[in-house]
Image (cartoon, rainbow, N blue to C red; front, side, top):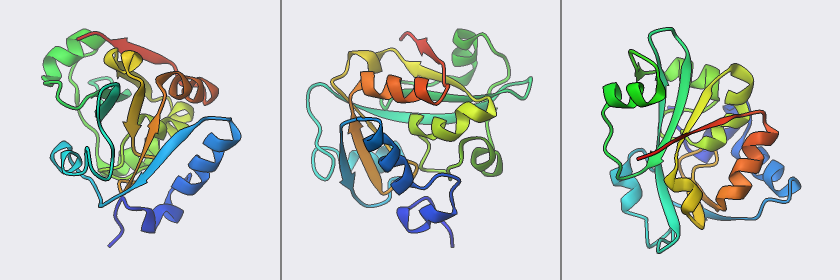
Length: 178
């Protein structure tokens, strides 16, 4: 069965290895951690402070691929413990009828499988019209932890480097205040 781990990265539009090579070529410094597959925030918390170092200045995120009533695609990146009410989130974003996108659409628009969604999926999403929304808390962190298109790897990347990568891919960030 195909899953979101690096064992199946060659079936993605951009493999995790290719993404990491792009990041290195762009001069982006990052720390790479390999760990058990993480499908949920609860899974991620089992490796935080262990396989994925935690601590002050590091922010762990959760990511949602959503569609609105007008069938527009959104990638929402929030601090992992932030409460989410889709109706209130939609009001903050100025869109109505937010719902979770299907696994097929996730692959079509972001090029990843469920469990591997992250802002780094905008390497694909920028070209397919996905709107990126990020928690303003990301800007204040020293490092952001994100999956590099697979869920058994995590990179720690500086927010400024992440913003530069996203801009290079043509992704515009809309910031969400708490």
